[in-house]
Length: 430
Image (cartoon, rainbow, N blue to C red; front, side):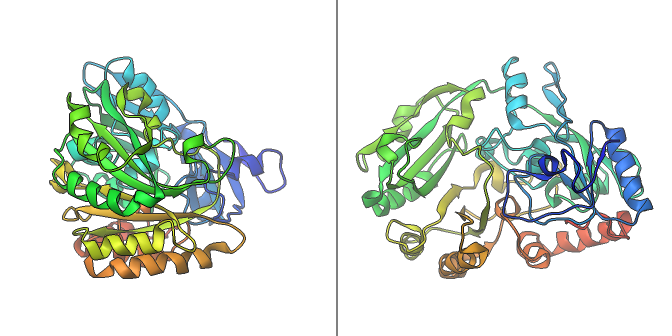
């Protein structure tokens, strides 16, 4: 077990993650290379009466720690069983490694929009991605989990176990997952990419996308992003310095051009990247940044997108907004609205869309971002049914998050399991 303390070489690098706006100063970092290292780290924490937090890539960091930080980024093993269509991956694995390994066998994972994100954190948060409307959440396809609990024991949990239920959608607070096994899908390619429109066309594009996506088949997963691009050389020329609306599409059908024809007719596109592509290149659809930065965000699951809501979105997040966030609307429904064979922690399966806002944390700090986001989400509140855990970014009050993302019955059960498996609250980040 490799321990690093403040001031030692490697400590700063080990603590640093993708999310840079959440301060953390652990008393000790464990640079784990195996499940045995994680067991030793949890036992060390118990011996020294320290709390435990975990970090793989740091994308989902929501709270710092002054206890033991277990860094799992070296645990990157990937095993594919092509015959069984399953993958087993270690705690620090990123989706890009699974995409590559599974793609060699014509298979695909239920990965999200960014291949740079860690598999375990994404899955435990209840993440859904590019095939979500066809196949549901990534957590719905988990077969087994290896987890180190607060007593320092390594357990294998499978369907039927309380921990198996809690971890798939309950995220953290119950242990450290060291490996995860999940099903793969017989998908090797799709029709995907984006249509990017100028900010002047935002109102028309929003309304057209709402109508079009409401009638989309389950084989089509889509989102609409509103982004103000900086005027910088690394931004493609058509988008440089512009506020745009970008429709993102991942479609398993064969008639892609016909399916998107109504959108292409709305307005001239600044860029059109739609094409058939290998699923291994699916990260190009959203082309999300890979550079670490500080960001803060929240979301609202909503029952509809009426004209009043679209007007509020344009006002508070469109080209004329004083401090527009990156605004993304995801079409839900399909398999995301159906109960899976082995349910995990519930979420709002009745919602038709989720509206999420994300802002880069600058000199004005998080408080200014919260105020700006509040204007948007207060306007959407009459139609909101809660929040989705995967899209709560940065520091938020833990109790507030729990109340807004978990159904009441599930929250009660999660608290009961927390008392059973971690009565000493070793895993405080949850």
